[in-house]
Amino acid sequence: MSSKIFYFSGTGNSLAVAREINDNLSDKGSIIPLSIFRDKESVQIDTDVLGFVFPVYFMNIPDIVRSFIKKLTFKTNPYIFAIETCNGAPGASLIELNKCLERKGKALSSGFVIYMPGNALVTPHNIEIERLNNYKIKLAEISTNINNRSINKIEGKGSLKTRIVSAVCKSLGKQMYLTPKNVSYTSQCVGCGICEKVCPGKEI
Image (cartoon, rainbow, N blue to C red; front, side, top):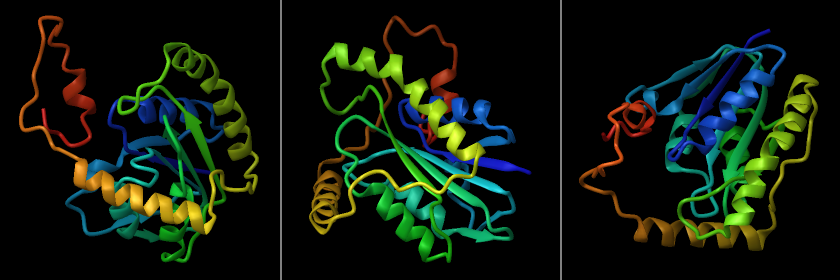
């Protein structure tokens, strides 16, 4: 049995989740940043277990995740799971991800939401600490489901109202989004290079 987990991570939350999940799988595989496939026209899937880990962006899936799924071709019929990290409302993001897979003739076997500290919304410090203390407990439960190949209800809301709110939020978010032209450093930088290695857009 083989597994691959494709992840997208902006601040490190989703990368941490992808690593933890892979460590917990009975069939350990590899975790791969999906950003490296930006210039690829197609990506072939030949594994038994396929995972996606990514953050929620404005109650929806990031465009880079959506674009990546469009490139997929399947040689196998894998067990597919997704885990999204979230600080606010996940909206219908996992439902939207499943719709993208359905256009490929596939579907999510399970989908989960994990609440983590965020960088876009102000969250009380005690809640962030609680999330950090508890997220591994949920990851252990998720890992058991994956190892057992359980078919689970996709977390989040798929109602028409939620889908509309998610679509509006995504549209407004794109209008507000600003791409920084320069990356600045403070005197606390020790030059370790970690930010360069994990930057999903390789902008550093």
